[in-house]
Length: 196
Image (cartoon, rainbow, N blue to C red):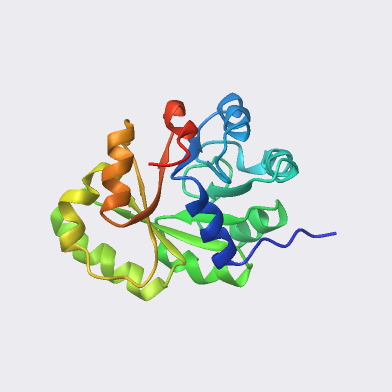
């Protein structure tokens, strides 16, 4: 039987349940993330062709999984890769590629578009891409910049995640205070945060 991921509203409520979502880059780190209180685990690096057992393991302990399509190996930014992730049981797909957001939603997964804040001059192009692609969630990177640039980002009509360089509980507090629904981090000490 084919797995059906939860709708975006359910995915968002699971994200909001704990303020810091594990962003994993190894199988060992992924398994440690499964022991955290977080309800959502992100897979940033892995072999994209071997994800199904990891995703099944996460579902088995009540966790949802978001996979970063741009970073996992063996997959490309195309329809076939989005369908592969759907068949592998992914609940959400993360990508910087706006044109993939409608495909991700058509596969009934939550669409998370990354907004990279590398240069101020790229902000307007990134915001325009988000508005065109209409993701379910926008992840701002590097997340620690969000408090400094939040006033420059127009209301997008979707929740914000903040990821990248989030290192301390104070970082998490600042990001949540400036409007992030949750933060993502590979810093394992932060995965234990239940309330801030």
